[in-house]
Image 1 (cartoon, rainbow, N blue to C red):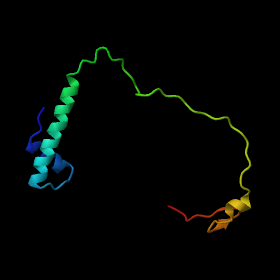
Image 2: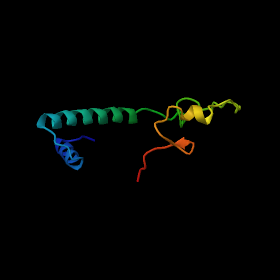
Image 3: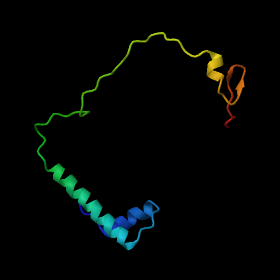
Image 4: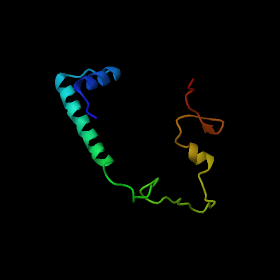
Length: 94
């Protein structure tokens, strides 16, 4: 598949981009280079390659839940700009 300068103009129009003539030429060359590379990848023989969802094996790294001491309410609210009824007071967002 080859991208023409007209295709780039149409894409720029749909994307609400104002491209100069030089930009159109540069994008046409870049997009055609990308499509040529993808075409080369499509020609590779992948019959012996097993499908994989991820390149690296996935495993969860979990830690054991342990009770730990935390800040008491006064320490947590010590640097709060505003506090109300023992909680952080933040501006109302509608």
